[in-house]
Image 1 (tube, helix red, strand yellow):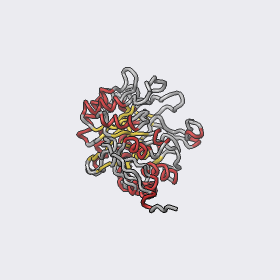
Image 2 (cartoon, one colour; image 1 turned 90 degrees about the vertical axis):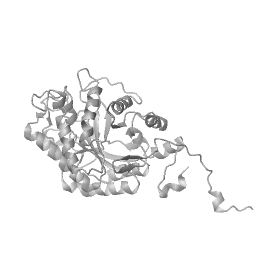
Image 3 (cartoon, helix red, strand yellow; image 1 turned 45 degrees about the vertical axis):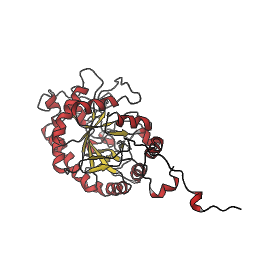
Image 4 (cartoon, helix red, strand yellow; image 1 turned 60 degrees about the vertical axis):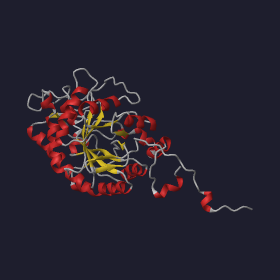
Length: 372
C-alpha cells in the first residue's frame, strides 16, 4: 500500500491570477475598500421600534464574510415619521446605537467597510410591513401623519401628506444631523444620504412632487436646496476623513420630471459640499411609470453622471454576473458596483466572482479549506 504525505493529498494546483479591476482597491478620502462590490441598501422590514436584531447581524454579516468591499445598511429612518413602515431600521435615538455597533464591529473584522443609508420616507410612509401585505396604517393602528414638500399623495394607496413648513424643514435637517452623530458613534465609516425612489428628498428635487412657491420650490436651485442644506449640515458632523455618498433617482422616466441633466447639475453642486460619490438609481417618485427595466439598464445613468460631472459613481440595477460587474468598472462607467438582489441570492457572490474572473481574494480563515 502506498502512503501519501498529507501535504501532497491537499496540495492545490497553482492558479494564474488575472488583474481584475472589479477586485482592485478603491480609496475614498481615508477609507480603502478591498474591492468595488457594494452591498446595496435593501430594506428588510424586520425591526421593532427601529432596533436592529439578530436578523440584521446574520444578513449583513454574511455578506461581509462573503467578500463584499462595502456593506451598506438598509434605509435607516432619521425619525419615527421618516420610516417607510413600522418594520424599518432606525437611528432616531441613542438606544439604537449598541446593536448597530455590534454588527458594524463584526463587518469590519471581516475586512469589509460598514456604511449606513440615512433616510426619510416622506409621503411614502406609514405602512405595515410588506410580509403582512403592503397596507397603509391609520393613526389608530400605529400609523402616523406623513409629510412632504407639497400636500400631494403619491397614489390612491397612500395618505395625503402634510406640506412641511419652515419649522418642519428645520426639524428634518436636525434629524439627519443627529442620526449622523449616532452613526459615527456606532462606528460606521460611510454615510449615504437617501435622495431617491420617491422618498422625501427626491420629492423635493422633482417638479412632479414639489409644487412649493417658497425658496424650497420652483427653480432647480430651490428644489435642490434642502438636499444641499442636509449635505452641508451632515458634513459638519461627519469627519472629513470619511466618505459621504448620496443616492439619487437620476431620472423620473417622465417628461417634465427630474432628468439626467438635472442629476449631472446636482452632482456638480454636491461635490464642493463634500459629497464623494453619487449612487445612481432611478424612478419611483410617480406611480405607473413605464421603466425600461432590463439587465444593466441604469448603468448609462451612472456613466453619464461620472463623465459629465467628474464625481465618483456607483452603478445599480439588475447586475447579476461577474463579467457584467467587471465590465462596468473596466469601461469606466462607475467606480463601484452596487448589488442588491444578486447578493440576496448569493451572499458569497464576491468569492464566486473572483474565481470566475481569475482574481485573487482573501477568504475568511475559517473557510480557506474550501477555497478553489
